[in-house]
Amino acid sequence: MKYGRTLSQASNRFIASICIFLALSISAFGQTNTSKPTTSTLMANGQDPTKGSTYVGADTCKTCHEDLYKTGFVHTPHIGLIRTGKRGCEDCHGPGSAHVEGGGDVTKIIRFSQLSVAEVSERCLSCHQTSAETSNFGRSAHMAKGIGCLTCHSPHHAKEGPSLLVNTQLTLCYGCHAKQKAEFARPYRHRVDVGLIQCSDCHNPHGTFVSNQLRTDAAGFEVCVKCHSEKSGPFSFEHMPVKQEGCMSCHTPHGSSNQRLLRVSQVNLLCLQCHTAIDGRDIPGMPSFHNQATKYQACTMCHTQIHGSNFNEFFFK
Ligand code: HEC
Ligand code: HEC
Ligand code: HEC
Ligand code: HEC
Ligand code: HEC
Ligand code: HEC
Ligand code: HEC
Ligand code: HEC
Ligand code: HEC
Ligand code: HEC
Image 1: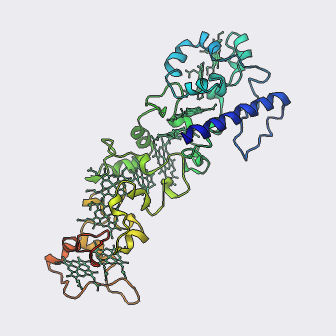
Image 2: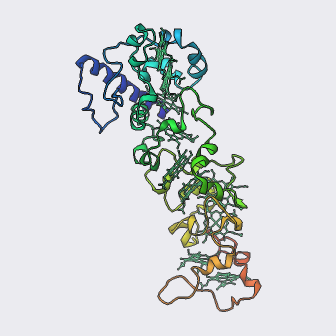
């Protein structure tokens, strides 16, 4: 699996750089290189508590931390560290010999509770930076607002499955995004509440290259046709806004009080936003026989293939 390979490459780099680091006995902790994933063990107070320590292995840690080993490690994905020949506990907490010799001296081991949000993220990203899923964290709105990995994840005390989340995804997101919670409570909505679709189907909480942390394309075409593939065409007769402005020109993504997640309450009002004869605009107005009679208000009764058609330029079929 590509992800696994890149991650283990990253981990190898991580281990390799620790070896170099020990060999050279660099003491200038302040001079960490920020342009690449760093393995700095810098603490909030500028000290590395594990400096001078050597690795003792997870089995030694287990002798005193057996409960945690059993309930918060062996069944988590991080057991993969040991399976792939790495150290396990000490990959995250640093080498533990002094901690052990001190009978569990907490000042000689990396404690995540003592690290700043940025230091925690840096440490996690020393392995996870290379995965496409998490590599954009540095440009995410979450990072910019001081939200780090441990707001959403816990390696030892996760409530939710393989992704080590501290709570269900929906509870997590709603906890901070009340406005979106209200949108998803509207009569017409994507059913995140029953798990038909998740926030992370459209967004990547770790940030992306496009706005709104959307997985693809800001205008909302790619991100939608992943599931609604029948709307993607290409069609012999395209309805121009679908491709040019994207699905968001007519729909809202989360929820709406209008049927079909439409931006406006009546279909004809939606169409008239563009199809009103205005000089100099190259969008056709309606033909004159489209009077205001009720019959002509239900535009999509006749123009049924409103997302594009292979048979008719007016989208009748
Ligand atoms: C000789 C027993 C012993 C061994 C072996 C041992 N620890 Fe500890 N460890 C302790 C004790 C005692 C504490 C303090 C517990 C407390 O404050 O609740 C502690 C605390 C810690 C803490 C800090 C907890 C906090 O308060 O944040 C970490 C992290 C930790 N150990 C990791 C390790 C790792 C990693 C290893 C293996 C390298 C290891 N320990 C091996 C006894 C041990
Ligand atoms: C992937 C990184 C990672 C690995 C691997 C890891 N830890 Fe931790 N450890 C953490 C983080 C982060 C915390 C802070 C609590 C949390 O978010 O779960 C923590 C907290 C702790 C604590 C504080 C007490 C507690 O329950 O939170 C102890 C003790 C500890 N780890 C010991 C260990 C031991 C022993 C191992 C190996 C069996 C280990 N850790 C493996 C990241 C890691
Ligand atoms: C030493 C390297 C290393 C460090 C440091 C590390 N991880 Fe991991 N992480 C891994 C490996 C290896 C896996 C297992 C990947 C797999 O099985 O494909 C993993 C898996 C995960 C997963 C589950 C991925 C999935 O497939 O669902 C999460 C979530 C995660 N780590 C979060 C964290 C967090 C948060 C931190 C910082 C506290 C952290 N990791 C630190 C190596 C690391
Ligand atoms: C705002 C909450 C949030 C923050 C902050 C966050 N994550 Fe995640 N993370 C998630 C959610 C939700 C998922 C599950 C996504 C899914 O199921 O599609 C996830 C999944 C992951 C995975 C598994 C990815 C995969 O390939 O499936 C890893 C690894 C991970 N996170 C690591 C991290 C690291 C490292 C950090 C900090 C740099 C971090 N996360 C910060 C919410 C968050
Ligand atoms: C069907 C895809 C989809 C799903 C599912 C989805 N979103 Fe969005 N979200 C979008 C799109 C598209 C935008 C951009 C809106 C725009 O451009 O008008 C957006 C915008 C946002 C924004 C930016 C502010 C705003 O409202 O404009 C936040 C925050 C947000 N979503 C949070 C969430 C949360 C939390 C969830 C899950 C409860 C979620 N989204 C589920 C597609 C989705
Ligand atoms: C700890 C609080 C917190 C949690 C938990 C959280 N967010 Fe956010 N989120 C924020 C803040 C703060 C912002 C920045 C909002 C702003 O700048 O207006 C943000 C921004 C966003 C944005 C908009 C990004 C942009 O470019 O404007 C999206 C989308 C988003 N979050 C989705 C999610 C999803 C999905 C989850 C659940 C996996 C989640 N958030 C969990 C606090 C949180
Ligand atoms: C992860 C898959 C997925 C993605 C991505 C997705 N949808 Fe959906 N969408 C669904 C499902 C499933 C339904 C049916 C919901 C139901 O039956 O409750 C649906 C229903 C709809 C409906 C019809 C609602 C109704 O009342 O009949 C519209 C409109 C819609 N989606 C638009 C969008 C737009 C716009 C986007 C991009 C922002 C998008 N979808 C992205 C899965 C998805
Ligand atoms: C020009 C406006 C417009 C654009 C752009 C648009 N839609 Fe629609 N869409 C509509 C209208 C109007 C309806 C309601 C049709 C009806 O009532 O029969 C609808 C209905 C839907 C439905 C539910 C009924 C069905 O046909 O399955 C889905 C799903 C949907 N659109 C998805 C999308 C997606 C995905 C995109 C982007 C690729 C998109 N729409 C772009 C106007 C638009
Ligand atoms: C966001 C603007 C926008 C909205 C909203 C919109 N359209 Fe269009 N429509 C266009 C554009 C642009 C064209 C392409 C004109 C061209 O090809 O020169 C077009 C083309 C058409 C055509 C084909 C005209 C021709 O001569 O080939 C029909 C029919 C049509 N739209 C009907 C509708 C209906 C019905 C609705 C409401 C459900 C609607 N449109 C909503 C922008 C819009
Ligand atoms: C009863 C069926 C019917 C309804 C309802 C209907 N139309 Fe039409 N529409 C037509 C026919 C028939 C044509 C002409 C096709 C032709 O010229 O061969 C047409 C043509 C169009 C054109 C193309 C004009 C041009 O010059 O290229 C647009 C735009 C259009 N309709 C928009 C709408 C809008 C907006 C609504 C809702 C307010 C609507 N239609 C409702 C039947 C309908």
